[in-house]
Every structure is written in structure tokens, then in C-alpha cells.
Image 1 (cartoon, each protein chain N blue to C red):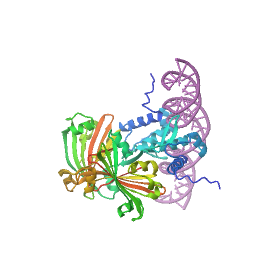
Image 2 (image 1 turned 120 degrees about the horizontal axis):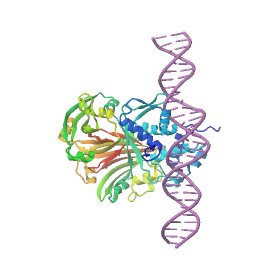
Image 3 (image 1 turned 180 degrees about the vertical axis):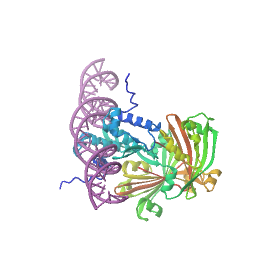
Image 4 (image 1 turned 60 degrees about the horizontal axis):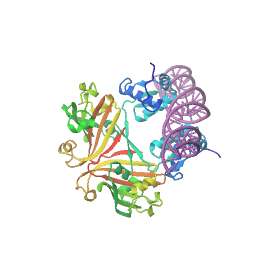
Amino acid sequence: MTEREALPSGGKAAYITEEVRRRIIEKEWRQGERIPDEAELAAEFGVARATVNKALQMLAEEGLLDRRRRAGTRVAVNPVRKASFSIPIVREQVEAAGMSYSHRLISQSRSPLPERHAARLGLPAGEVLIHQRAVHYGDRRPFQLEDRWINPRAVPGIETVDFHHMNANEWLVRNAPYLRAELNFSACSAGVRDARLLETKPEQALLILNRTTWNDSGPITTVRLAFHPGYVMTATT
Amino acid sequence: MTEREALPSGGKAAYITEEVRRRIIEKEWRQGERIPDEAELAAEFGVARATVNKALQMLAEEGLLDRRRRAGTRVAVNPVRKASFSIPIVREQVEAAGMSYSHRLISQSRSPLPERHAARLGLPAGEVLIHQRAVHYGDRRPFQLEDRWINPRAVPGIETVDFHHMNANEWLVRNAPYLRAELNFSACSAGVRDARLLETKPEQALLILNRTTWNDSGPITTVRLAFHPGYVMTATT
DNA sequence: CGTGCTAATATGTTTAGACTTATATGTGGT
DNA sequence: ACCACATATAAGTCTAAACATATTAGCACG
């Protein structure tokens, strides 16, 4: 029987990706070692060079291979692997966990931008933005506290939205797609207000996610999300 | 002048990606709307269909487009964007910040695996693994505290390594490439031991990263990384 | 009015070939 | 030994064409 081992799923490129990954993980090809060039692999697997190229580019993005023109392809010495996580809409995140979603707008005002946010956004301090605080609940228990600054000049039409019914997170995702985003994870102790809104005790350790987004007309919004105690955010490779 | 606007960088596929992204962000193509099919776009941009396909696949991975056979390509209604961050070797992370790296092995032993880690790893509780604690320093100040369990059966040769000189993070990255990893971010208050080793006060809020890796022969290692107070981890889109 | 088949269609994937580009390496001159 | 330059090489990109596959839409039939 000369049957080809079953393509694990997907096509030939996916098969080659898995096979090459296996050879690296099982040390058939060692760290720093040069692997056969695209033409040789194409011959070995009986496919076109473009197919091998596609497979190897995937592994290079993954960080397992280093590829350079003329120098060939090598197994990465210090594989800097990348992990990714998705940034869903809070409501969908809550509902995906089987809880019923609700939210409450705590405050909304037009306020001059404080110094510490100005640098992050790249706007002059004192410029008037929309500032709002809201709590997102799952089954009526606090899930996430958000403290948000919105640049109205980047989002025309925002003045007319009633955020008591529509939460800002969802409205912005649908109405202000961004070009670039920056996310910062940190931990801090709950202040008095954080604790009250999240219905927990002060000094409780909280996972904080700061997110700032831009489009080509400048910064859109910056938001500090404080998760309820015990929340775990997951990412995979 | 009929000059084509300069390809921003990279080739035609990259140009089409950027142009389509622009049309979405500037609302020329609205959420949920069907966009022209690959053949039409190929004609518009004067390229082969494969080139358009590559460009649109990138945007689909990014979460901006939804594509389905026969149904065509639509602008995503609730764009679930993905962010990614790289997982460097601790030493490189410290040195990249311009600090001098050092580390200290606090303890190392062969111990039965406690219940709470067993589930995560998928091994029976009580199985004997290597357990070690170490601190990574930048300019002699604690940077990260690591509490690690290593499965010796997944990493032959580990018995002979002297982790006083080589840290486990670096050794494993180079000698035990993984197939799959899971990362969990959370926040917790420093315990007494955490505080002593990180040279901070108990109850201080700490950013915690739990990482577990597997290859095809089973789990390799699980590690709890506690960062020094004030540490911020950054991810981008 | 639904149900199941069929055909049309848009994306998914691969191929062989050509051309481009970065760069490692060898060569010759000083 | 050192430098400048030419050359070969391997990856990067694109093309035109073909075939594969999922899914919608229409149609015939009960």
C-alpha cells in the first residue's frame, strides 16, 4: 500500500506545516540548523514551491523558523512565540459564559482631559472629551468596571447616543472601527470607588486592562477596564 | 498623470489590504454589507485573483471581514479583533529594558504534584515532578518570581542540568519546543513568601501569568510568574 | 407548502512559471 | 589583510489557469 498518510485537515500546505513542526519538535531538525530550501522540500513532498512557501511562512510567523533571502531557512534559536487573544464585546463575553448581561451607566460628562491620559492618547491635556464610567454585570453581579474617555472629534454622531440603553463598548465597536490598538495589562489594588462599584472590598487585587484605539483621524478612545476579583483572562498560541 | 499611488510598503497584496481596510474604516463599505467578490476586485485593482484572495484572507484573520463560500465576503458586524503579544525569554526581556540580568534559584526538589496543578496539566495528582522556585532580577532588583513544575518524562536530559547557572526558562525554550501553550492572566495579592522574594510588602497587588505547555508526548511544564509591582504587559493589534 | 434534488456561484487551494530582491560569498585589486 | 564589486542563490511575490468544496437559490415533485 502506498497510501499517503491522511492529510490531518485542510490541504497540503497545512500538512507540510504540521510535518515540519513535528520535525522541529522531535529534534530531527535542531535549533539554528539550516533546513532544506523550498525547492528541495517541494520535491520531497511532491508539491509546487508556492505551497511549501505558504507552509513555511506560517511557521515563520509563529516564530519557529527564521527565514532570510539567500541565507535560507533555519530553525529559530530562541523561538519567540506569539500568543493571541480575542477582544470580544463585553456583552458577548458575559453571555458566552452563560450569564445574563446588564449594564449601568454611572456617570457621563464632558471634561478636560487629565494629564496622565493626554500622553497616552497624544492629545493636549485640557482638551474636552466625553468621560464616562459604567459597570457591566453578569447575572446581576459586577463583571467589569469601565472608565472611559472618548474623543468626540474622531466619532461624529456620538453626541446623540443614549448610553443608558446602549453600552459604549458595543456602540464604538460597531461605529468606530480602529486602525491600531494598544492593550496594557497590569494589577492594582481596588480603590474605594472601585470596590464599591465592583461590590468587593478595598485593597482587593484587580486585573486591569487599559485599551487605547486610533484611526487615521487620531485617537478614538482610551478605557481602563477593571475586572471582578478572580477573573482570569486566557490566551493561546 | 496616471501614476499609481505609491505601494505603501510591501507588494500589491499589502496595498489591497490597506485599501480595503481604509474603505471599511471610512464607512465606504458598512458593517454587514457585502463587498465585491474576488474577481471584481481583481479587475478593479488590475491584479490576479490569487492576490486579492491573499489580501482578503489577511483581513478575515484580523477579524474585519467574514468570508463564506458561495455567500461572498461581508464586513464583520461585530469585529472580534485579535491582539497578540510575544513571549520572550525573561533574560532578553530584562536586557531589552536596558537592565543587567541575573537570577537566583531559590529551591529545587522532586515532589508529588499537588491536586490544583494536576488538573491543569492533565496528569494524575501525586505523580513526582521537578518543582523549583526562582527569582529573575533586573539591575539586582526583583523582576519576576517563578514557581515551576517540570515533567521530566517530557524533557529527557533535564536531570543533568544545573539550574544555578542556566535558568529553566531559557533552557526549556531551547530544549523543549512546545506544540501548544495556554496562558492565563490574573491578579492576586502578594502572600508573605511572594512579598519577601519580590522585596515588596504583603497584600501588594501582583500581575500573575500562568503558562502551561504541551508537546505530543504530554505536558512539559506549568509555571506561575509573578511580576514585580507596577509591571505592565503590552499587546498590540 | 414543504422537501429534496440540482445547478450556479464565490471562496479555497494548488500548480508551473516568471520575475524581484536581499544578501552571502567569492574575486580581484590595492 | 582589507575593501569594492560582481555573481549566484534562496526567499518573496505575482500570474493565469485549473480544480475542489461549501452553500445558496431555484425548481420540480409530492
